[in-house]
Length: 255
Image (tube, rainbow, N blue to C red; front, side, top):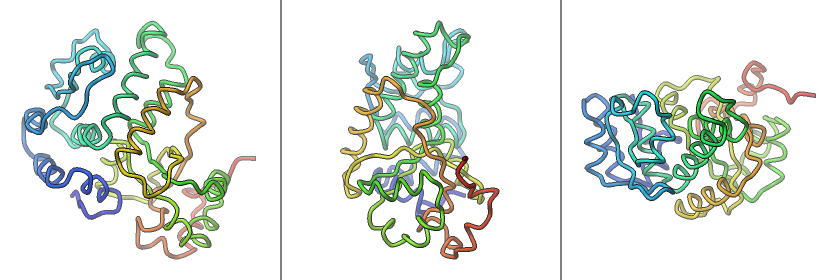
């Protein structure tokens, strides 16, 4: 069941308004692509094609998914929640999704197709696209503690500071799909957005696109592992310090 009031879905609902609930209602129906296209194109690829959603069967067998989107603007879409959330991400973060698609297409071409080595930039883009979480903040001290995996310090002792200084936004569509049925060990790959936590969606989206396209060293090591149910305000049980004692989820930093 998808609850639009859940902490992870609420910002997407805020961004899309009535369209969010309308699209959620389509999860049990066929022809998702047509329902999405009725809302208009969410973005334009960097190659100049309006993004549209098409049946997954229209993806040529010899063409990589990301390459096809970049070359045509057509996003192959199946009638399931995974692809629904991918489409929603296009509407919520059109510029950032366009940037990730361009990076993927560039890396696939540069490395001789999907049969060649993926490389760090493509790996990072995939992690962000599928499992990404955004931490919008200018509080570098909190992020340093998070990077050191001082879970109780950040999420318990500095809980009020975190909730005042950090805006958390779900980005990855596979992450969204997993959060339909939350479990404690769900761990996202977080990207720190160096903006004021009150920045608008458009400002965040534009910043991400510019930053990701400008990176020449994009790599998975730039992402932070974050067990999402430990985020303040995301799960009622995490108000207790004992919630973070589970070392199988809240792991210590490697020496």
